[in-house]
Every structure is written in C-alpha cells, then in structure tokens.
Length: 195
Image (tube, rainbow, N blue to C red):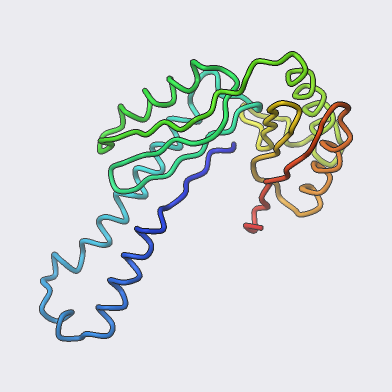
C-alpha cells in the first residue's frame, strides 16, 4: 500500500511554538482552563481520525493498483491529494471519496494523470515481473494491495511503498534498473524502520 500522509510544517511549527510558550510562561499556562488545555489533544485526535479515514477511502478505490501512487496531506479540515495515477477516473474517484468524509471541508486534487503510452505500459509490466518475481520479494505479491508500487512516466520509473529491510529495498532497485527501456529509476521505497 502506498498511501502516505504528509503533515504540514505550519501545523508542526504552531504546535511546537505553543508547547514552547506553555513551558516558558507558567503564568499563561496556569490561566488556561482545563478545556483549553485539552484542545490540542482533541485537534490531534481529529487530525489522526481524518488521516485514517482518508487513507482508508483511498485504499478502497476499486481501480487503485500497483501502478498508481496516492498520497495526501491533511491540514485541519483541508485535504490535499497528491500522487500519480494511470486512469483519469481514479483521480476523480479519489477526490469524490475524500469529499464525502465527515469533517473534510476542502479537497485540493493535485493527483497527476500519467500520459497513456504503450512503452510505459510495457515497462510497468516488465518491472512488475522483475520485482515480484524475485525470490526475495515474492512474498509481497500475495494479497490485494502489493506494497511496492511501480510508477512509470515517459520511461522514467519510480518505486514507492514500504518493504521490511534495506536489502529488499536494494533488490527492488536492482530489478527495476534491469528492465529494458528504463531511462532512470528513482527508488523512494521506505523500510518499516522508517529509512
């Protein structure tokens, strides 16, 4: 599954600033009511709920495949959709699904629809066979959503997703680079440890 969220820097900075002010000015902290002290926790909880629901809605899209990459950013009640898809309908379906989530007021759809190309389609399938056919990575081919997503645009291949180890990340990169006709490979795979 390659759906990831990106928290806004502004939100992080404002929370960090609020924490700094609360620590450095005890008089201000003491003057806040218990309800005001709970608000950051409530807003964090709402933010986390929205992120879970957006992620769930995107994963459940019927035409979301191993050749698509979806990402999003939640900022308050605003959601920005990012990534690349092979079907124009998937872009509009993603926006529609997220708009229906309770608590979302604005959806900015920045998903790129990849240009149709027989050569890119050939590269996608060759990369799929090379990566998921490798004995070290075969276990990832089982299930509805494979964790390694293969995005190809004009002969340039990008790997997105999460694997267990750095070794698996490297094997996927080697297999992708071995596909005939690929101009470049950008390996954005992350490991479960976060690297």
